[in-house]
Image 1 (tube, protein in one colour):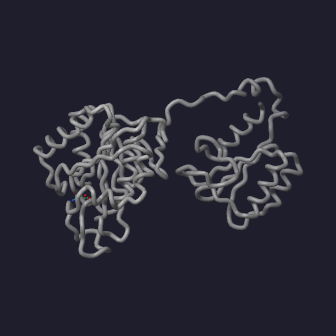
Image 2 (cartoon, rainbow, N blue to C red; image 1 turned 30 degrees about the horizontal axis):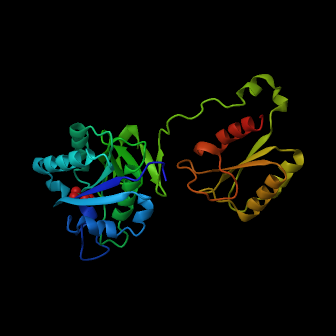
Length: 318
Ligand code: ASP
């Protein structure tokens, strides 16, 4: 739960590939957009209730078109329906299903016309609903998560796990699932396992609570924190050697989403049991560990191993 009381999330459907069908499941281009109704799109998400977390879904088929055929009359109707729903006190946010071709124009139009203080989240698909692996259900699920997030206001677009602002979003690819970009501005955030991670997470402490120790304590007495990496065939003896030499903390840059070779994990768990502070991060340059993936504690705020070493050293000065 994100702390909000129960409210309505409204899904307004306008068509697009997300509601498209093809005769053949492997056909991602020879399909007809705007064929399936909004209830059909929602029925394709068996875990919808998990995304709603007690909120109530209301849906409405506003139009049914391929967004290459978008026009001003449809924009006016869509803006009117958004204005109506946004004015209802029990409505927390709106999700709009839309074709990808003119999504960026509709997003900007709605931002300029509505200037909403509640979230209005456009989403879409690059593959028709009949594809072997359609992307629409996940995008819709993600868009609902964003529409429920307390930090969102204004018009956003959600596609392939990335959240874009109406101002920056642009379709940049003809075929791939991640077809949108925010250019130099970058995405506003990401949706991971139904949770929103903002690129700018808002305020967090910019100064460590033990900072004063650094100014006073001789550097020879600063805690010793080592950095290790997971990789093929790691040698657990390096953990034992560090322990024997008196290491106080170990940061492990795990593989992928914080995975650790079983031999290294056993050694690090043993180190932890014997009082060594262990923190887990990832050796991947992008993304951060998602979910509770290990019994080892995760380094804070998605810090890389080298910054996590600094933070752990300061933690240990307490
Ligand atoms: N032509 C489609 C549309 O914009 C393309 C899509 O949705 O991906 O409606």
